[in-house]
Length: 267
Image (cartoon, rainbow, N blue to C red):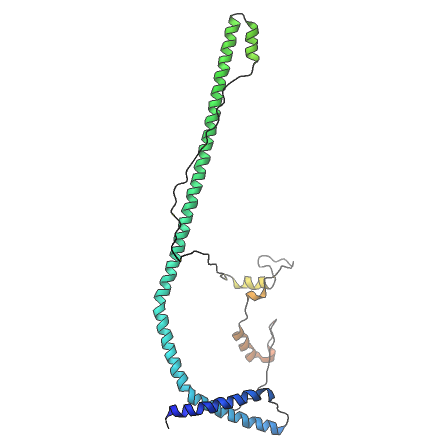
């Protein structure tokens, strides 16, 4: 009989036996020497079944796993240059979009500065022109008053000197500064831009102190609100290793050693 036929015939038997065991698991109890001996026999049978499952399925799984690993490695090898190039294009497009936005803002800022400069120059021009007109009006009034005084018309001369200076007023002209044309925003069908933020832990001890509610920058004794403990994850592998080594002597704040007594049985 070939291996294929053996496997096809044996798999239903193993599956049926596994279903029976799964239903029996909640009922497992050991209360006396007889049930203990039965448990030893049942476990021996389980060990034989497990060995047979490995004998039957092990080579198939190993072959399938090797094929899967080869296929995955090939797939990832094919993907690497394309994924890297896509990421490089994405970063370059983001930088280009940022540069276009920077240029647009720079153009607007330059236009604002030019407008403020021209408005200031226009105010200075208006002030200077109004001062010139007032001076001309004042000089004209004084000349007319002097002429009246020379003619002996004292009353007219006094009236001219006492009267307020009447000079035309120059108003500021509106200032218009067009914004220099900026590069258009990059756009293409199916392309959009978004921010991609990530967090980088630059000092783990500071983060730990922050979660513990301790101030990382001072030595004061006042309580500080802590960061959520979900920002940290325990190194379970390292903790389990310490528990195996120290057993009940494990003494780490916030951690307790847990011992579960189990029975080992050889096949």
